Length: 212
Figure 1 (cartoon, rainbow, N blue to C red):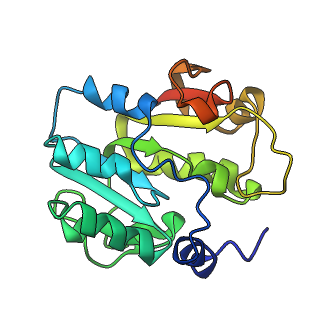
Figure 2: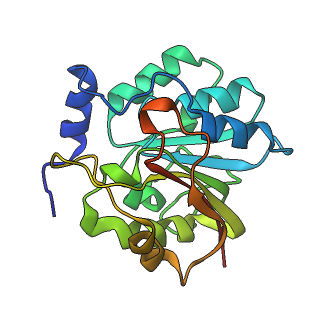
């Protein structure tokens, strides 16, 4: 396991401006997915969200139950400055894998007390999976499964390439990814992303997975 990928490492990336993965705004695949959602009161979680342009877009579009989780404090502060309408109690600075051990902060509807497990309708993936130590990839899908309601969805993009430099980000491929979740999720969509932003064109898979 890559032990130095901790909260201090990630916070320093933001403080030092070493955020090459940051597109500066919501990217096209998720914007177009969000634009077709009908219900604005569904519970949405964006883990490893970074500057969380996706959360900003959702909140400004009227979605009322948007939760953001990140290891680092700095990107959550950035989001709160840019998007004052987001509920401060929905900004969770924590290790995603320990989210159900947070003693307070979540609403009574989606509460995390160490006994109750929060259940979300939708979890979004955007540059979180590729930032994780690859030894955690199976655990990532298992944790997403545990946080979703029955029939809940995991939606977003995964890199479909191998990077020349040592990560993060860490690449991968469709066959590898499927081996992690095939017993947990049904595939709605799992294909090359047709509307990636230009720098990522041809290197992304769009996923829409439903909890079994």
